[in-house]
Amino acid sequence: MKGKMPMIEAMSMKGMADRHWDEIKRITGATFDPTTVKLGFFFKKENNFEENIEQIDAIAQQGRGENKIEKDLHDMQTEWDDVLFDQKDWPDNSKDATIIPYTCILAGGIEDITIKLEEHNMKTSMMKGGSCAKFFEKDLDKWHKFVQGSLWVIETQLKVQSTWISLENVFKAPDIVMQIPELGAQFQVIDRQYKDIMKHMTADKHVRAFMKYSNLLQTLKDMDSKLEVINKGLNA
Image 1 (tube, rainbow, N blue to C red):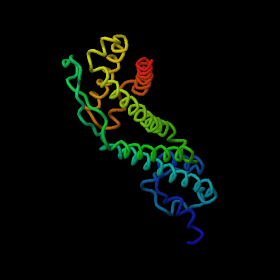
Image 2 (cartoon, helix red, strand yellow):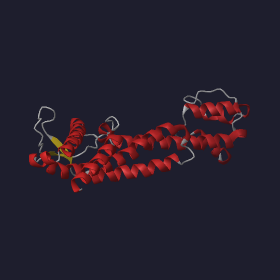
Image 3 (cartoon, rainbow, N blue to C red):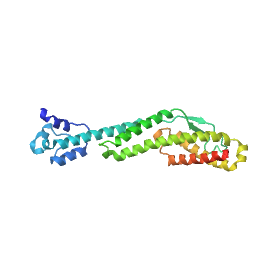
Image 4 (cartoon, one colour):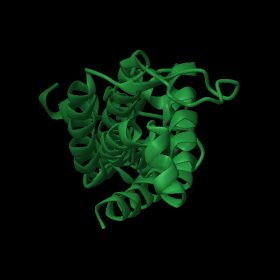
C-alpha cells in the first residue's frame, strides 16, 4: 500500500477539473470517466499511470493550486456584495432644484472600505505572481483592475469633495459670483458634475455598482484639475 500512496494521493486530489483529467488522459492514453472510475483502474499496468506518476502528480498539484485561486477569487468578490458607501445629506445651494434637489457627500466608513481594497490589492498581486495563476489570468487582471481603480477613485473623490465643499461655500454668495463670473461659471459646471456622480451613488450605494459609473476615474481627475484652476483664480 505504501508504494501506491503517491498514486492514491494524486488521483484523489481536490480541485481536479476536466482540463486536468484531459491532460492525464493525453499522457497515459487511457480512456475513463473520472466521476465513476474505480481506484484499481489507475494501478493496471496497461493504463500507464504508474510510469507517468511524476507528471500526473504535477498536474494534480496544479489542479489544487488553480482550485484555491478560483475559490479565493470568488470569496474576495462575494465579500463586496454587501459593502456600501455611507453618505450624508448636504445642503444644495443651487437655485435650479429641478435638476438635483439635493446632494450627498461621502461620510464615515471610507477607511474600512479602503483597508479592504488594499488587502485585496495585495492578495490579488500575490495570486497573479503564483505558478498556478495562468488559467485565471484574465479574471485576476479584471479583478485587480477593479480593486486598484476603486482605490484611485476613492482617493480622488475625497480630494474633489474636500475642494468642492470649500468652494461651494464661496460661490453660494451671489455678490462674490458677480465679481468673478467666469470662475463662478466654471464652478457651476463642476458642481453639476459632482452632484450627478453623487446622485448615481445615492441610487445604489454598493461600492461595485458605483464603480460602474462611466469613465468615473478620469472624470474625477478632470474635475480635480479644474477645481485647482478655480482655486488659483480665487487666490490670484
